[in-house]
Amino acid sequence: MNERGMTLPLTLLMLVTMASLTLALVALAGLEPQISRNLADGTQARFAAEAGLEWAYDRLAETQNWNTLLATANATPGVVMDANRPIGTLPAARGTYTVWLRNDTLPGDPAITGTAVDASPNADANGVVIVTSTGTVNGATKTVRAAIKRLTFPPGFFPGAMAFPGTEAEVNFSGNSFEVDGRGWRMDGSGLDAGCASVFGISVSSVLPSNDPGANEAVVESALSRQQQDNVLGRPQDPNQAAQGANTIAPNEALTPAMIQRFIDQAKSAADITLESRQPSGLSFNNIGSSCASDPDSATCWGTRDNPKIVYVRGEPDPSSMFSALQLGGNTEGYGILIVEDGDLRIHGNFAWYGPIIVTGRWVGVGFMGGGNQAIYGALISNETAADQGFREGVMTGNSKVRYSCEALDNAVTARRLTRITNWKDLAPGE
Amino acid sequence: MTSRAGGFTLAELLAAMAVGALVLVGAGFAFQVAGGTLASGSDQAEAQQNARWALERMIQEIRGAGLDPTGTPPAFNFDAVSMPTATSLVIQSDLDGNGRLDPPAACDPSGSGERVSYRLVGTELRRATDPPANACEAVVVGGVQQLTFTYFDMAGAATVSPAAVRSVGVTVALRPETGTRPVIVLTDRVRLRNR
Image 1 (cartoon, chains in turn red, orange):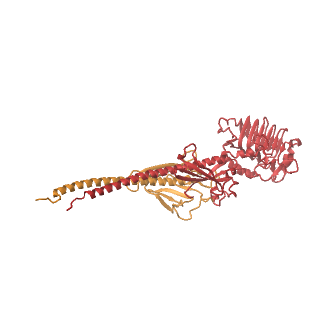
Image 2 (spheres, helix red, strand yellow):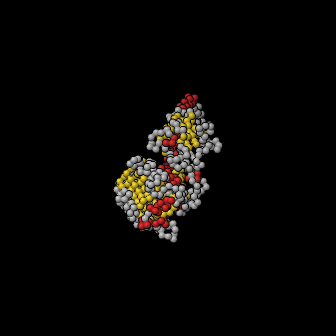
Image 3 (spheres, helix red, strand yellow):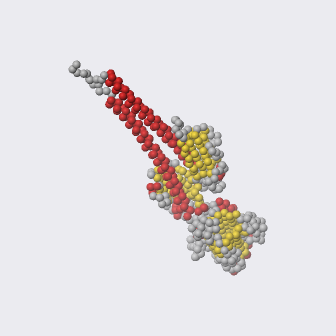
């Protein structure tokens, strides 16, 4: 007869109950930290991906010709700009990013870039590329994609060292020490740049004024004495004639006032420095650039070689044609793109600018007023859009030079604000 | 009486049963308490999960708001957010790059859309892809006690102008759908990457 009782089963039952309860709690306790770990890793991975995008932006902004980066790219996924790169100086365990660069050649790319596709994966012709950056932290990955756009000079934007694409090209040259040279110069003035094709010394509109085609070319040519004509050099109109004088003062239809307007409308929204100039006295500065060494971000530093700037001066239309929107004096030096709209630019003293200067709008002109060594390496555009017969669009006095320079123009496009990250998108896994 | 049969007297049995019952009551009590803790713990975890999920989902969409491939800053084709209020907003993106905001092809309130609205109705956070009609709407999460959107301009100052919005703050307060656990509050602020 066995009457051992219920102790063992009861104990076992309770043990199992307690154990399952404990296990449930432990599972819950273990799962929650894992969930938050995953969340933290995922968040960090996304920041790592964004760091990759910023890094890529930096590389692209400082690169003059993006085709050098696209040289070995295929259509998709493109070319690796860098793989598993740690964030700044942090150890790799804190996150890494891998960045791919490709040109926009795929049929779906206009939805990313907003522009028509390029033809070749290795040649950017439309100023936009696509960057994809994947951040990784502890096995969690996140990918972001963006189009990176740069505002570039449209083809044919610089037909001459000095261009008068507007309605008038009334000019005055005094003395014999000025120089207008459409041959490609090195930016430091050390000599000619064999890789830079010559442009005309002076180009003028051939369709404006509409009532007298060809008038502007004759106006410029007749403003130069025979001796002065020797100071204008550049691509010859007639290849069998000398590459100077009247033979390099030529009509051009590629550069139009509308094209300039489109360009400056975009450039001024990206300007590093925007200045409002009011009548009657306008703005006047001395020694621009002297602050660059101590404070490159200051409003009186108009760019350095490594960090060119876009400077935009907005004037006011003055039908009397007398308004100088900007006068520069002392020792002025700058790099980048200088735009003066609706007012004259007058240059006094020592002056050096590396990049294009665009003076455009109603009743405008550019004057090298003497008083020092004055030089533009790059190009000068004086675009008069309102007729003001008798008032000049270009004046060169004293020791003044306009030398065409591909190197200076290419350097100007590295102005950081010309390059933008657009169309940022957080990609879903597998997208 | 040579041998006593193995067994217990009634008194012994009663005593043993009383002790056993006491132990069982104690164990049952412990079980109940533990079960309650477990339930409330998982309720709270669930509420946190819901709040995180809701916030993450909104933040991710707000971050990418204003995608406008054919627009050229500052001349965009549309604002990144429209109808911004404290408890609702509409997120706008030109996903197909055709320069305009298209209505959804079919009703899919949890899918992608060029105009996506989030709003609080009662205690429900709802998402729709056809604002302002919101006829095609789904509940993202329930038990929401508070949903607050705040809008900031480029300088970080509060703004109500859709065109000026550059970053958005989101606060979600959520109570577990069952029980009376405390409210979970999560907050985040996100910059619009495309503006």
